Length: 368
Image 1 (cartoon, helix red, strand yellow):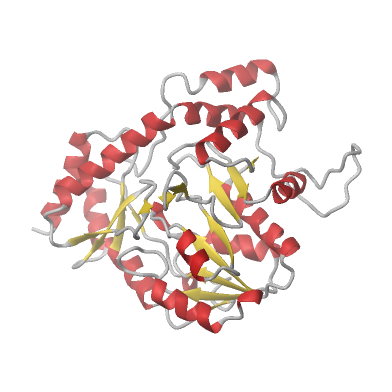
Image 2 (cartoon, rainbow, N blue to C red; image 1 turned 120 degrees about the vertical axis):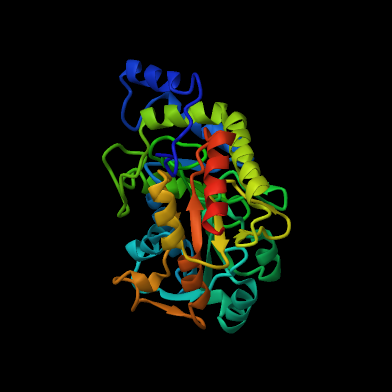
């Protein structure tokens, strides 16, 4: 079976984790917390990274920060076709927000930008935040949106977009705050883990307190309702090793995407996910949209040939706890079409040309 994803643990990347174990600092303190944080800051060209236990809690932390900093915000614009953790992270913080969804674009799989701008034009900007999610690693040009709406508060779920770029800057670094995931299927992994990136140092200090039970300078004295969202030293050590090998890992991922595009480019039945202008995708997962046929048929065919796939995310209407909470700006037509017609293919860094040829040629054979 060719699995949908397997992490790449390059030689030497686990040595740091073994060192952390030997040190006996196996919980939320230890030297690798700082080492991984410093390496991540350098990688992202920022100074305000905070490591946390996973991507979902990182995204929840974003909205705790939004609620504290912008109590006047009542409306949050959300995409209608993302992983459920994105929506849940808002609701974990507050059920009082008015969540308005904008449909996706069939080319980028992200926001339909014309519809997004129409929606923003009808919303009171001072009471509205925009939630950006970089679907399947395809990057939305956040700096352009910020220039067009300079007073708009923008936060990014960069869990899938991490290692991507917009206008020459790492994604997640040109907004109010963003979240990252280091889950096992991400380009750079800690097994589990995440990070919160903030624009301002004071917000980073708040996040550090929020993820550590709301601690103060006096031990065991706390002054806010908070969480224990800290990353362990062991996970930080794995992440540190991955960051040391980041260029090797990202080069392998680029090769995988190049092979797929090379072999499938002449198949008139598939359409590649298209990037926005002035962006570079993260090369997280490789997916295509099918002009004819649907995900279930092709997925079943590939499964019989020992190839694992997954669908594009469902529209929020599919989730019982969300269908009556989120309201569409216009409709969800494209999200439903995309879920039915898009397929995500195996994208491990270690996939060699022979396996990619097998997968791609089976897709070509499926369409005759």
